[in-house]
Image (cartoon, rainbow, N blue to C red; front, top):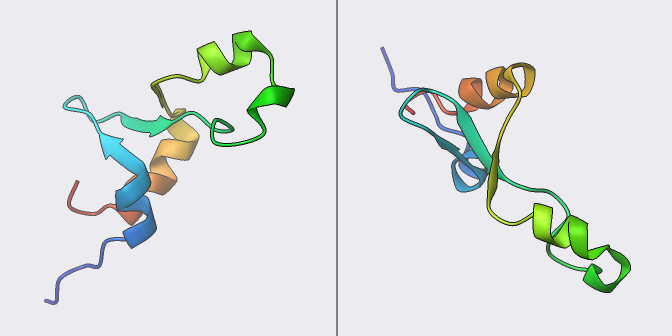
Length: 65
């Protein structure tokens, strides 16, 4: 049986934790920062854990993660 292909864009954007959860960076932190509140800029630092419904889609794209 042939190998399954990993989605290249997903492997760059998501990481799987040791417990099997999916981490991603927070949206909206790259540009137009002057229009955003300081609270939003502060809260968007680091990473976030995806909800289960979104994580299922990502895990399908990362078969060997």
